[in-house]
Image 1 (tube, helix red, strand yellow):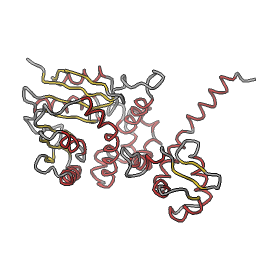
Image 2: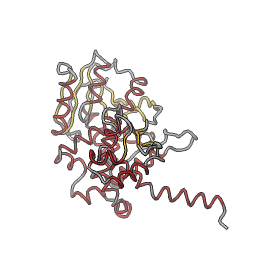
Image 3: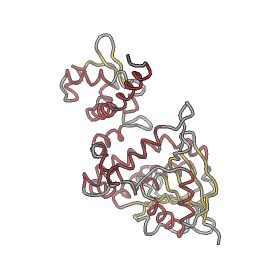
Image 4: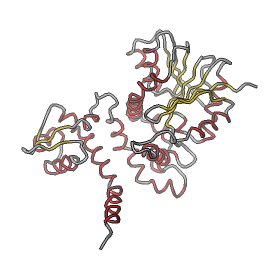
Length: 348
C-alpha cells in the first residue's frame, strides 16, 4: 500500500507536469475572445460558439476545465460566467494579463517547447526557432512589438503605485528613461511630477509608439522620444537615468556595458535608478522563496540563453553597478519583490 504522503506527492507532481495545459487553455480562451464575450454576463457554450468561431462541445469542455482554476464559473443552467480572476484577461482591466497571454499563445509559448535546447546547450531556444534574437524579431514585426510593449506596460501598471510610494522623483528636474519602450513609465512619472521634463530612448520602431503616447498624454512640451542605442550613447547631462526592467534582458557583460554608457552620460550630481525584480527579496505568504522569480528566470533562459537575460539578487546587481564604475546608494525593496536601486558615479 502506498504511503499517503507519497500518493499526495505523486498527485502534486502530476499537476506540475500538466500545468502547461492550464496555460494553453487560458491563452486559447484569450485568443478566442472569451473574456470579452462573457463580460456582459452569463452565456452558454452553444451561444458563445458562434461568436468566437469554436466547436460548441469543445468550447464547453474548455470553459468547464477552467472552472476549477477560478477563471470561469458554471451555473446550474449550464451557462458560464467570468470570475474576478478571469476579468484580469479583459483588455481594459488595469494591469491586464491579456497581452501576456497573447505573447504566450505565440512566439514565446512556442519557444518553451524547445526549452530543453537551452538547458542542454546554453543557447537561446527563441533564436533556434526564429533565426534571430528576440528584440531583432520584434523590430522586424511591429505588430508583435506592440503586443510585447502592452505586456510590459500592463506589468508595470501593477508596480507603479508602489514605485511612487517608495520614491520621490521631485528632486530630479530632468529624467531619461533608457530603453523606455512605449513611454508609459515616463508619461506616468511626468504626470505625477509636474516640475520635471523627460525623454525616452529606444529603438526606431518603439520610439514611434512612445511619440504617440507622449502626444496622447499632452506632454509634448515636457517630453521627447529619442532614437538611440544604450550600448552606444544616451542623452548626456540628465539628473536621473532610469533602467526599468532592462538589465534582466541581458547577460552580465552586456548589462555592465549598458551601465557604463549611462555612467558616461551622467553629470557628477546625476543618479542612476535600476528597477528590476530582486530574486532574494520576494517571499510568499509562507515565508519561503516566491515562485515567480524562479519562473521568470527560466523564461529569460528560454529567450536569451544561459549567458543572456536573467533575474538577479541584490548582490548581483551591486556587482554589475560596481563593475561599471557606479556606487549603489540605496536599495528599496517593494512589497511585490521588485527592487529600486539608486546609484551614483563612483568618486575617484
